[in-house]
Amino acid sequence: MSTVFHSKPDASPELKALYERLGQKNTAPLWEVLGEIVTPQPKAGCVPALWKYDEVRALLMEAGGLISAQEAERRVLVLENPSLRGQSQITPTLYAGVQLVMPGETAPTHRHSASALRFVLESGEGAYTAVDGERTTMRAGDFILTPSWTYHDHGNPSDAPAIWMDGLDIPMVNMFSASFAEHHPDETQPVTRPEGDALNRYGAALLPIDFTPGRRSPMLSYPFARSRETLNRLSRSGPVHPSHGVKMQYVNPATGGYPMPTIAAFLQLLPAGFDGKSYRSTDATVFCVAEGRGTSRIADQTFAWGPRDMFVVPSWTPVSHQTHSEAVLFSFSDRPAQKALGLWREHS
Ligand code: 1HN
Image (tube, rainbow, N blue to C red; front, side, top):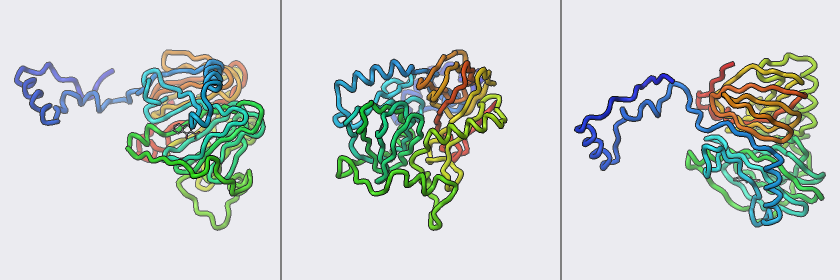
C-alpha cells in the first residue's frame, strides 16, 4: 500500500545517538513513526473471524457444569478477536461474548459505565433480564438494551438454558479511562414497573406528553417477532439493496437516533439466492445469524454460516454476503461514536 508519509532512510550514527538521549527524556522523533500513526487508509485493527455456535455452546454448557452464574457474576465466554487475544476485544472498540444462565439461576444486579446490548439466542419461556426495575422476557432474536449506568440483573425461572450474545463498548470506555461499576444492594433488584411497560409507553409511535428524549433509547427490548415481520413485509415491497438486502437499524423511537450513544445495531434480511455486492465501512461490525444459511466473503476469506453463528468484519474491509436460503442477520458496531466524532465513512 502506498504511504502518504514515507519511512525515512536509515538514521545516521549521530541521529541514533540523539534518539538514545531523546529516549532518556521521554521524547521520540515523530519522523520515525509518522507513516505508522497517520495512515492513508484505516488499519483494520483486527482480523475477520467466525465462531460456530455449536462449538461455543458446547464449551459454555461445560462451564455451566463447573461454575454458577452467581459465582461467575456473569458466566460468559468472551469472543476474542484472534489478533487481539487476551484483551477481551472482538474489535478494537467492542466487546462481545456469549452468556449462559441455567434454569433456576440468577446473575446479580450491578451497573457500569459501559453500555450493553443482548441478542437472544436460546431461551425457555420466562428467562428475563431486568433493567432499572423492569423485567423483560428474553425470546430468541430479541434485541435488548442495557444503557450505561442502569442497574441490571438476569434470571432464568424456566426449565431450559438461556443463552444470548452480549455486545458492550468496554474497549471504548477503557480507552477514555472512564469506567465505573458498582453492585446494587439487592442481589435481585426490586421490580417497580410491569413487564412490557417501556414497549407500551415508547414502542408504538407514541410518546408520553411530558417525555424528554435523552441520550439513550427509552425502549428496553425490541422483540424479534415485530422486527422480523417488518423485514418480511419490506422484502416483498422492496427495494432490496445490492449489498445489504433489506437492512434496518434499531432506533431510539424518541429521536430517530441510535439506541445508545456508542453502539448501533441492525437487522437485515437477505433473500434466498442473494449474491451481494461488496461493501465496506469504517465501523468494524459484529454479526450474529438469526436465521438461514449462507456465506460472507470478508477480504479474501470466505466464511460459511448458519443459525446463531457469529462473525466479525474489521474496519474498511470489503464484505459481501451470499445466501442459499433466506437469511436474517443481526449486527452491531461503533457507528454512532464514529459519526459523533465525524470519522465514519462507507464505500459501496
Ligand atoms: C455485563 O454486565 C454483562 O450484565 C455481560 O450480562 C457481559 C462483560 C463485561 C462487563 C460487564 C451482563 C459483561 C458485563
